[in-house]
Length: 216
Image (cartoon, rainbow, N blue to C red):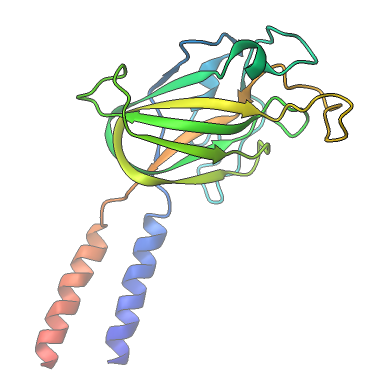
């Protein structure tokens, strides 16, 4: 019995390590309503370029995306120009369980603070977003991976609407003196899918079944 319990723990431990995070890097990203100051393609550089390929997947500073500043500083970009929309194309349908974001910088208020998501499958197309998940809050850090669980959803296209950045009015005592807020920016965006069961796990389950039948 002890050997069987050890084998179960070993198999599931190995499977969890092998499937710690399966990232999907979008194949493209566009914005229908904002103009980039830093290139929008910087949002989807992927493991090893936009963020570390090893846990804990720290961001790699240096290349970020940010909008222009139509209102100038000090102003609130969202109040001036509306909430910027990003449309990510994953290239195919995936069953998504999480969106990961890395912030713009802790040095100013331009970073995305709140965002909403809508999803569309390959069959629906990028012009037919339906299922929505809302009320996400992103951190400012451009280093720490910010993990946002999703209600599992199948999608190829993801519409990301940045409903607020970290702007606060100058002089109100809440940090509004910090530069920024007149733009909206992020470091990187990636998605996580439900991993397929590993062959080792499937084989192990079959082996455990055989061992139990022999003991019976």
